[in-house]
Length: 290
Image (spheres, rainbow, N blue to C red):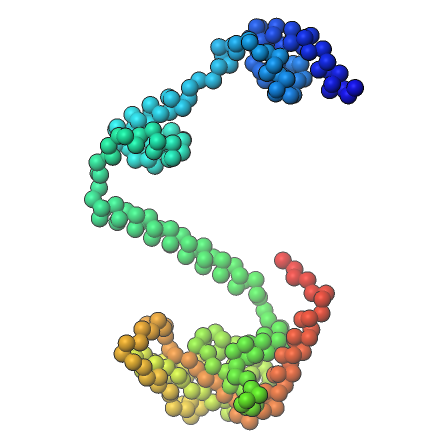
């Protein structure tokens, strides 16, 4: 016979103790702890027929909440306000007060919309601040860049964004196109680190006809620091009046094309460097340090 079976074998003896404790005014929890009876079914049978003490009877809390909810609704409170006041769910509130008339609006729809809009604008401002703070911290994590780091970054940058020779169109020359000024700056720094001279570089602006072409040309000339003679004719993209372009505004300056003259050998080296990176990255002993 197990220890538990042995303890419950003298059921009548346990019942006498449980009933005596119940009549002393103890709750079921107190009786359970006193007699070490942790089986709720057996505990219920031990005190069967004995009423709970008055102090242990659970009040009809739901009824009280219901009455308070109805009273607050009659005063003109919304479900949200009643929920804050009473701490109960809106689904329960809805069941309790659904027969009562809705409170009269204290604001016009326009006023309510304006209040909601101001709240949303505040939320967006907070999100923007958090976003910028994340970017600021991340920027600080980079620090100084070694020549090798710039070298590897440039190879990956070119292979992601630069022109590549295709089996159906063999074209081994270094050409890089991008609208991001930062990408252009990094690419030019990389080329100069590789020994590419300024007289080997040629630039072309590609831009939509509706943009401020002259302003864009000045911007790219200032960014690159190149002579006017290094810039070819700007390519203007024509389009239908029905075209709904998203890249508009003062920040739109088109794309800059950067070409390196006599760059077939450099292109082949870039391709070889890239596949060297692929092979090195495939070695299964890399671990990212958080």
